[in-house]
Length: 223
Image 1 (cartoon, helix red, strand yellow):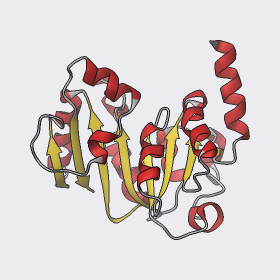
Image 2 (cartoon, rainbow, N blue to C red):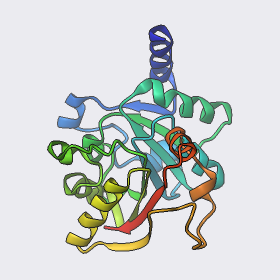
Image 3 (cartoon, rainbow, N blue to C red):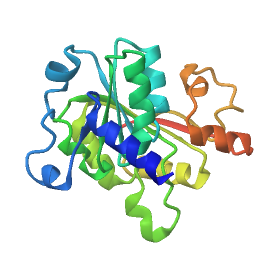
Image 4 (tube, rainbow, N blue to C red):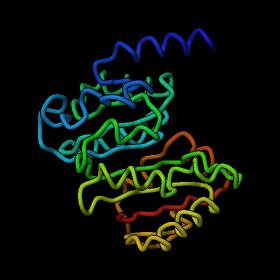
């Protein structure tokens, strides 16, 4: 298992669609592509969509297949996880996909102000302990960073199997008077008509928890 992870980690480091931002870079100049994603990597002006904590990149790649006129970037700290999505994108010659290996804390060192159109947060660690609230990806510390890189009117999408985490995010939204565009604590049981990508693309964790009978929560809001 360890050898396999090391092999994937080494391969990810050599992939043309993968980039790494270190702690030192984040503190200094940031990622070299910051502010230049359209011009130097994607070579188009199509919208940029992020998947934060992307894991194996199921949503990054799944969305990229359905929306070839948008650019998708998955962000995760684990190189061996990113490998799956990055490899799939390379094998399918998908030019609208990239991955960044770094901490979500450093997201504003990867993108310039107003460079991103939309964000997806798919099945993040809910950090249930009260002492770890600051590590939740939907708390205001992170949202402040998202606001910086999002264009005016940019949206955040959250999918989670953890209803307390969903409720916590609703509270953050209400306290800060953000605009809720869609909300449900039972995506598959809700009768509201929605874009099919919400149910047709499933991450590893969504499949895992759905099969165990957990309800899937979804939130879309503008910050």
